[in-house]
Amino acid sequence: MAQSVAERFARIATSEPPAETRVLLRRAIVLGGSMAGLMAARVLSDHADEVLVIERDGSEESALPRPGVPQGSQVHALLPAGHAQLDRWFPGFTAAALADGAVDPPPEQIRNYFNGVMAPQAPAGTLGQSLVSTRPFLEYHVRRRTLAIENIKVVHGRADGLEFDGDRVSAVRYQPAGGELVVEPADLVVDATGRSSRLSDWLGAAGWPQPPMLRMPIKLNYASALFRRDPKISDVGISIAQNQAGGMVTPRQGGVLAVEGDRWLVLVAGYGDDRPTRDLGDFRKRCREDFPPDFGQIADHGELLGDVITYHQADSRRREYHRLKRFPARLIVAGDAVASFNPVYGQGMTSATLHASCLSAYLRSDPVLDKPARQYFEQVRLVVDAAWRVSTFADLELPHVDGPYPRGYRLAKWRSGLVARAAALDPGLGLQSARVTTMLDHPSVLSRPQTVLRALRLRLLPS
Image: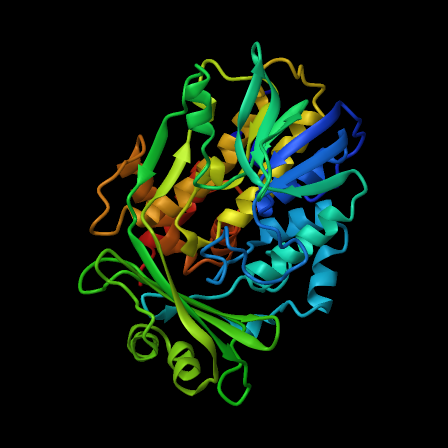
């Protein structure tokens, strides 16, 4: 019997360590040493004699933001599904990160607000352990664990293109800083160079079809600032606030995270012409007037550490490699190079860990490596669809966003709205909804007839 989409997604998101791995490759090369590249390298270390990571930033021992990640100082979230994958690939990862300063807030310090109203929390332990930190801290720990594996090494330089032998990728070209162009032969290549990936151009230049790209113009603007944590000011560990468009409400997002180093990382975000600035007065005013009291208390009374930092993201985008009828063998794409989403939903790094799970499943399936990795791209499509549906359904409510609308959008919107309203009243539906937004389950579980009927019954109950 064919598995449902939800069942297939559950196999990808499993926390069970992989079994019966075997070496298939002499050398694998990963382009990019961010989260997606590091996770791919970890998976490949089970299947290749040598794994070479080509990374343009030369700071693998630093826990500071990397030059190649301009948004690195902003708020990032690793959702529970991502935590599970890190512990799957690096046993004991969460415990080690917590011992080094990452934060696991107790339930009473976690608050989620929707249009100013605090939502009920899922029961303790039902969504897995939390792990709150800055992105550089998290990447540093993943990088350290990855590069400690004997058959993985990193070189620094800028990826410059691919070479082909018939219908397969055979080598990578890269430019070391201050050096001459280097050609490295490869039995498998992973592009993990992020949303600015040039793979489509490289394919086109070599006569291969280029993947269609879907864009949603979100025009997101946000600002982040660090403050010294002080229990006299607030006990907040996580506070997330979403003001959804509609009526007189201006769509805005905000977050307060307790991070390593006894600090709070505070984010305020707007859309279109609503642009937070680097001005501390503007930042404090937004925290005080646009968000729940946690924000204003910290911004007004906390000790500022450093400057207010801004960032802009014009769109969410996905490159649909699964649609290509012709594609080179021995070539994989992962992370933001496949799809990047509105970052306020925290799906990016978690998606990267799930792409690594897809790569593992592909390499353990006894693949024919001289044929395109279609099985891999179909599994990645499941992950991208899950994140895209959750984030873009919310973004399509923004007044300046006019598509693209997915097939069946009106029905799906009605159904998701029905379940969302019922989830605020029913703990079981609330937990199901939370498992979807944290990428533990596929959104299709909320479309099951029994779930919709349950939500309808709640709606019809007398108030």
